[in-house]
Image (cartoon, rainbow, N blue to C red):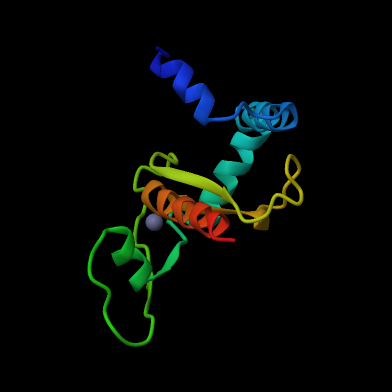
Length: 129
Ligand SMILES: [Zn+2]
């Protein structure tokens, strides 16, 4: 009989070396002083406010609630980090084209909930391709 760990190894293929290398590079950069400085500059530019705008239908669907009929309505997230420390905020790459030497415009401020929602949406979009 196989252990659950062995079974999981069968289901989940090991990551390719290139992917592991990319992830290690990403993790190292995210811990760097350069990224921490840029992250804070992005939060300051955005006034420590989440910049996410959602279709109301998407949010309700994420929460498992019934969707209203009609035209999609947009709702801006109202989260503000009053402490202005970046607690509860995420600096989100809108492009990885200049990863490691980003322009300020390549990164936006999101709150943790919007980041989770948008990450889930992006993954679902990729899976449905
Ligand atoms: Zn938000």
